[in-house]
Image (cartoon, rainbow, N blue to C red):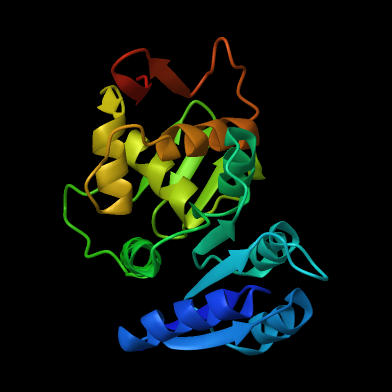
Length: 232
């Protein structure tokens, strides 16, 4: 193990608690109580994952996450006391996961493990098979597993690792309707639980980035009561 985790939270007791649980699981933790010091660490340290509180005394977690996304693709988990659906969707629009306070530290560790599993699969070079496709070109959208890039009508989409994985899985299964449960378990690598809106939030953000029309999307279509599909 020994992956490097950034923890940023101005609630010192909470940050210290998360640090203890992560270190007990073998992770190296870089802990800060403000955004300014965290940004310095991001620029100078190779990180594998970041846990960011939204409400910080100087720079909010959303701004830090946006700075991360300018250069890096490692997963980001947002921590916040906000529980409204709009805040959750905002959190997932820039990050890979979202946990509301108060929380069980063991849940944080479990979410960290799930995100790292996904990230490692994302980074790992794929063993090519004769019948394996490493690139899809669908109606003006090109997505490449080798370069981990998606080009839409000549312009590169700035996708998070999670968004890329969702889009790739749908392209890989083009023409099939993929249930929310299957998509979640394939991308996040863990069991789907009822009332989980994570997939819906990420699909919504993907459509925004692709400038999809809500009523008649060209690419990711909703099959109500079933799941999502990219038609052939």
